[in-house]
Length: 150
Image 1 (cartoon, rainbow, N blue to C red):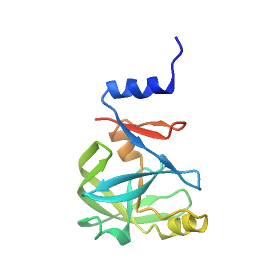
Image 2 (image 1 turned 45 degrees about the horizontal axis):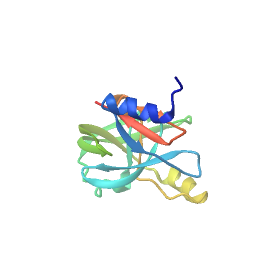
Image 3 (image 1 turned 180 degrees about the horizontal axis):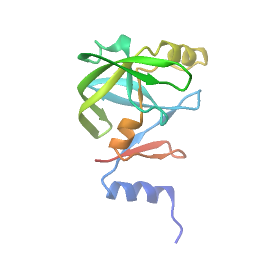
């Protein structure tokens, strides 16, 4: 019996996965629309990012309560990034949701400058491996869907 991509979608639905539409952009990345603390935004999906981030400039937009602690993270380059932490956030991606999520805040102006230079709209943040692991993520690159479950 031949299986199809639709079989994957039905199989995952039967396993309680939630289907989330991904949008391809000029940089060959995917973006997705989600809500953080009930505020809608556009985030880039980055399977190589260990954590999820929001642009520091948008802390008020997303009602983020900042912790006094700062953590050091590594980017793809040789430089260390200083991030500020916000705990106990609520994130909703499609019908999938997570409470008490820790989100790091960094300056995304360099990333957004690159996106704008190639004709892509800026993003509010990055969805990284922390959320992908928590949701047991499966990505269907051909059909452009992210699947998450509990």
